[in-house]
Image 1 (cartoon, one colour):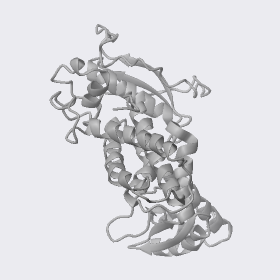
Image 2 (cartoon, one colour):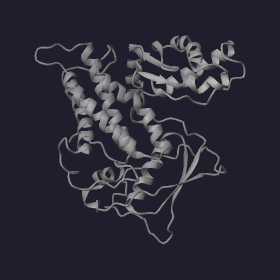
Image 3 (cartoon, one colour):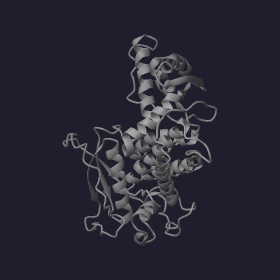
Image 4 (cartoon, helix red, strand yellow):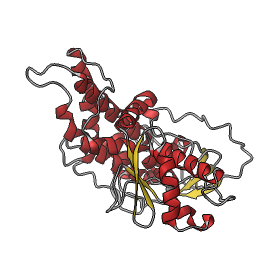
Amino acid sequence: MTPADLSLTVLHAVRRAVGEGALRAGTRVPERVGIERPRPGGSGDWATNAALQLAREAGMAPLGVAQVLRPRIAEAEGIEHVEITGPGFLNITLADRSRHALVRDVLDKKERYGHGDALRGRAYRLVHPGDVRATVLAEAVRALLLAQGAHVHDERHDDPRHDARPRHDDPRHDARPRHDERHDGHPHATRPETVTLRPLPAAHDVAALGPDAARWALLRPAAHDRALVPDGLLVQSEANPLFTVRYAHSRARALLRNGAQLGITPACEEDVAAPRLLAALGDHPAVLEAAARHRAPDRVARHLEATADAFLGFQHTVLPLGDEKPSAAHRSRLALAEAAGTVLAGGLALLGISAPDYL
């Protein structure tokens, strides 16, 4: 179950509470409620402040709203239990089958896992100076907005004298096809919101790094921070986060090849004890949505680093060791490994960076 699924579950509970008279009639149901990881002192897999958000309009204390919503959320499929902490936070623990459903969701949607319609009906025009870093940032922001259902008009450079047409050896040039304009069904008459992107220009020439490392150097820091210096970005070691992310993806692909040689196919059959990795996969849709809303591809890059780190700590448990016989546990771990590789590949694709199977 993803954060988006949980948000819909909470909203359904709110509508039920209003319809049944447990919350004051006329209480406005918000379009969305926030789902986040539990704060210090919290518990479970996810938490929401929906009760605090609704309290004033419902004419109740947040704790009272939380007590109304708690049993209605707990009845939903895939929820193990719900606790109330603090002034009215609802802490939600997922059932094991929901963790299986998360992995299946990733494998079903493949690299489009985390794409959604949070920004459907919104239109944007990106404006930027046209230098290398600004152009690369605009391409990544465009991909993130499209992935959340927005329509993006062609980028415009705010200096008409600047010719920003990229050369084929320039990190601004992305040889892969852009995301299709699958959201062109939005009315073009809608006035687009102009978004001005002015990242701190790169102080170093990153073109010699090649497109993948160059794009990482330009996108990994926040736009107001300096671009990464070229030193170390081509080094194949754990000290290079880009290498770590791409290495983790290649290891996931290698495990699938090795599993096939042993006759093991991925399948979600048993619960897998990998809380960090499952949490990272579950966070992916919320990270992509936040990155799109804030025009911040660096959030995706940081999340990929965390996902890669969690996967590399898990990978050694996936396949049988020694005389160990293949089992449902191995098939379930292999499915989780495949899901991790899928998320890494999808995140890198949104940044315009390749994810090779062999590294």
